[in-house]
Length: 203
Image (cartoon, rainbow, N blue to C red; front, side, top):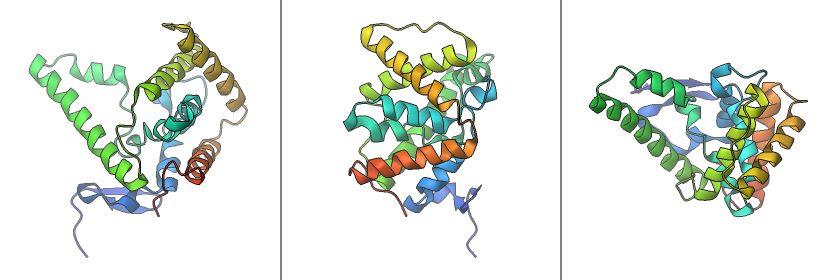
């Protein structure tokens, strides 16, 4: 048996992070993991996963960008949700050069994974297009309001409308907080987008 460079255990088997292949990014593996990773490192008032966030962003995106929206955080299947406050804390006592090295390492890891995921799913990158970024920011504003009572700060009418839609969608999702519901919602969105030809599902 070949020795793995970086063994990585998943519910669908052990993969080698040093030699990732398209089959390592199967829909169930990504959805199952993202559904168990809570946004804000678990500080929310109830379960709210990266899977739920990704579905929300996808639904807020215009039709041509929904695939990118669903996959924009798929790299967290491998590296987890590195929240902005956590990264800032890690950089706090570093020299400016070391701080840049941390940012570079994170950016490179996300970028490398996004390329591999895009190739596996047949989606041209980058995932974080301007449309996806707007939807992602609206989802974040809605999440901050919903979980922490922070008033949304929207830069224009379009952003405010997206945020209102996101809050309404989150209220509908609140009735199904179980992690497996988030997993199934992510998979359902992936299957619907694949049926429309927006990407192919790795097997």
